[in-house]
Structures are given as structure tokens and as C-alpha cells.
Image (spheres, rainbow, N blue to C red):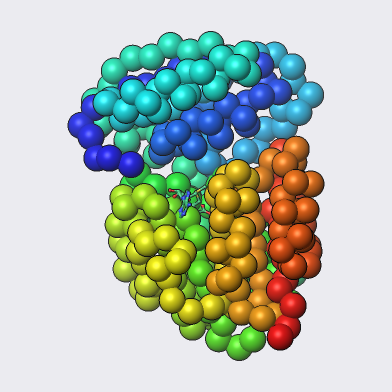
Length: 313
Ligand SMILES: C[S@@+](CC[C@H](N)C(=O)[O-])C[C@H]1O[C@@H](n2cnc3c(N)ncnc32)[C@H](O)[C@@H]1O
């Protein structure tokens, strides 16, 4: 992602059934966040909520069109805009664009972010934006995140399932003492930071986006955790890890399958997220065919996350 002074706001409308696909398309094309515009019927006003926050509204049975999704792309990124336009049109969505100054929206979308809590067998992990104050309960692990322009505030279903998977493996005694993690597509660094707070001894994060690496470094400092971060691709990352986590889109995960496999220690685990329910079978067969065994599967809304295990040597 390039640092720019101007942004294009995309206001997209379309069928509710493909809302998650439209959101994914905007984020995958470089929008740092997506907001849904709704109407507060009591107040008669327009409100926005970030789709990264934990959604409490149950809209599965609602068939009305989405009022609007708002995403943001760097002003000069014509290629990304063209991808978004054709992708949205293919799934029956219409869009309007307008120019914005960076400051107009970067503070605006942050307002929608709220702390989220992930629980497993009495253990809990809270991820909160730095500007939120919370009362910490005894034993609660709290991670502070300033997302800047990177993905990963904990609120998106794909991140939450990764956090839950890490918690499950750690608290279920499935990993050796003081394990290591490689977080591929680290974004804000949230998964690597969570792992360190859960007792990992070593955490390495990579991201193809240099801005994300900078943001992750800042978040590591903020949480007083030591992460090794880089924008190198997997072939440039030394060593093998007890746990490899990758929350990237399914197509990219498939392309990376052999490289991911090579980074797992014998007996170690691979967490994969960013997979739509409809892509579940093809991901399962791609990763089973390279010799990994499915350990468990989590689902949330249209998303699934896998934990696979590599055979012991
Ligand atoms: C959905 S975000 C996940 C962020 C964070 N790990 C989380 O779970 O919330 C995906 C991240 O993967 C990065 N990414 C995409 N393709 C990648 C690749 N081939 N190698 C490394 N990072 C990649 C993106 O830049 C983005 O920061």
C-alpha cells in the first residue's frame, strides 16, 4: 500500500447476500477498512459501523439491499479502482465514487472500532483499539492495537478465529513449552502479539505490505512484545516454527501452500483463515494433499478457519 494524501471513497450498494464478498473485495483491493451505512430508525439518522468490529446485529434473515458499504482506495490507484468496479459489478453491486482528504475518513472509521473478546474454556483475550479504556478483569490478557493503515483489529471474523485457534492450541496443551510462531500476513501484528502474550518465546511476522510491517512494529512496542518483522517472502525467512498462522485470502493461501508447509516443524500446526465457506473443500483438499492432517475447523458467519497438523518426524 502506498502512502498518499488523497483517497477515493467508494459507496457501494447491492444485495445483502453478497455483503461479505463485497467487503472482502474492497479489503483485498487495498481498502484499510469497510463501513456499513445503516439507518437509525429511532433517531431517523444515518449511522455507520465498521465491518471490522464484532457485529451484534443478526441480519441472516434480512433480504433488503444493503444501504451502502463504504471503502477507501488511494487516489492514484486506478488499477485497484478498476478491479473493485468490475468485481462489484459482477456480483450485482453498483458504486459511486468521490474524492476525500486523508484526514476526512481516517479518524472517522476508527470511531466504529470496539474492543473484542475471544474466550476458550475460561481463558479470555481482549483486543482493543488504543483509544478505548477498559476495566481489566484478573487474568485477562489485553492487547492494544493502533491499526493505522493495516488490517487486524481483532473484530473481523477471520482474525477472531485465528485468535481462538491460538488460544485453543495453547490452552489445550497441544504445543511445546515456549513455542514459536510465524505469522504470515501479519497486518497490525495482532496474532503475533497475542501469541507472545500467551507465552510464546519467539514470534516472527511477515507482510508483503511495508506499511503493515511498520504498523506491526509500532504495535509490538505498544504491547512491550518482541517481534521479528519483515516484508520478506517466505523463502527469505529462516527456521521452522511450532505454529504457522496465515490469515490471507484462499487463492493466496493455495499459492503459498508448499512454502507454508516448509515453515512448520514436524508435529507443528498451521492455522489458515480468510477462507469463505464456499472455498472450504478446495482448501481442505489442497492442504491435505501436501501431507497435512486437519486438526479442527472453526466457522463464523460465511468464514471458516482451519488448523492442520504436520506429522511428527
Ligand atoms: C486479512 S489481513 C490479516 C491481518 C492479521 N494477521 C489478522 O489476522 O487480522 C491479510 C494480510 O496479509 C497480507 N498479505 C497478503 N498476501 C500476502 C503474502 N503473499 N505474503 C505475506 N503477506 C500477505 C496483507 O498485506 C494483509 O496485511
